[in-house]
Length: 143
Image 1 (cartoon, rainbow, N blue to C red):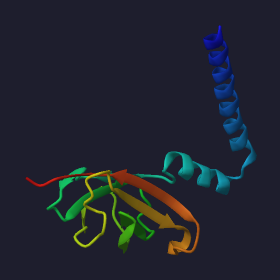
Image 2 (image 1 turned 45 degrees about the vertical axis):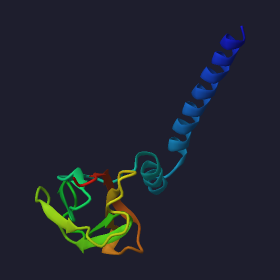
Image 3 (image 1 turned 180 degrees about the horizontal axis):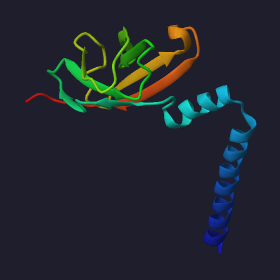
């Protein structure tokens, strides 16, 4: 009997929490909705970021990436392991190489480091973010 009661309480809790999140989405404006999307899905704006080197070794010092559907008229900022490595306009469906040679934590093997793409309103990092994409890569020990 205790297991059934516990299960019913858990089910009600899940239902209440899911209903609250839907209610929250209907109460926020477009700007706040974008912030919620980034917080929940780690992704906002149009387009995609694809790592062409999803796995590297500790000896490799380059990552390759490609975008699709990103605004080509805006400056694109790329960060690797939370350090900016790129700030220029890019073309979609074109391969780019970025150096990660001197980036602390870019070669960590205990977790998957991330590559992040940002674009901002009016190409100014002080303004609101319009696009955010994130991808992780894996680092394996060199043999």
